[in-house]
Image 1 (cartoon, one colour):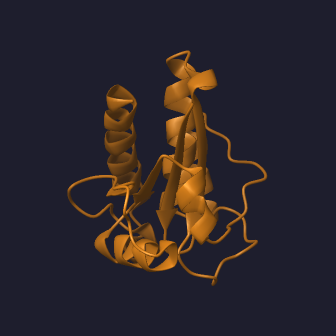
Image 2 (cartoon, rainbow, N blue to C red; image 1 turned 180 degrees about the horizontal axis):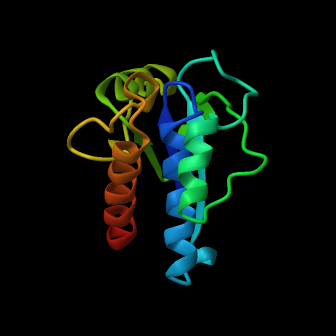
Image 3 (cartoon, one colour; image 1 turned 135 degrees about the vertical axis):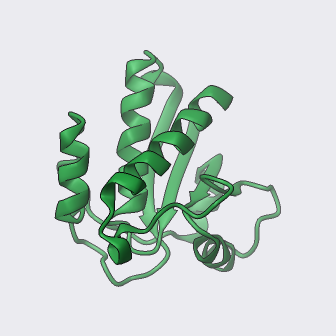
Amino acid sequence: MKRILFVCHGNICRSPMAEFIMKQLVKDAGREDEFEIASAATSTEEIGNSVYPPARRKLAEHGIRCDGKTARQLTRSDYDRYDLLVGMDRENIHNMQRICGGDPEGKIIKLLPRDVADPWYTDNFDATWDDCLEGCSKLLVES
């Protein structure tokens, strides 16, 4: 089983979008039994909060539900639990390495070579959807 944890700053926009896009891609490929997919935050700001409404709406436009998802913070034990910890931008990667005590096994990666568009600041959920779909599609092919 491949265990993937998507991580962003607050776990209410980018990382849950990536989580649920990846779950849908895996389902569509008939490979659900091969993966465990989740998401988390590097910060504590949004812990317990639901997916940000515009992110939830963007997922729903594509027939993807994220009911019940609430933000949680990345923990050091997540490094042992997951095969890949996938950050959305350079700052996430830095904070993930700090929280996990480094990356001795090379498990911490960025979803894309560039930073994933952050809709919290841009309000452009289309760009974030496109970035997450691109990165998740590549991850699925490589897994």
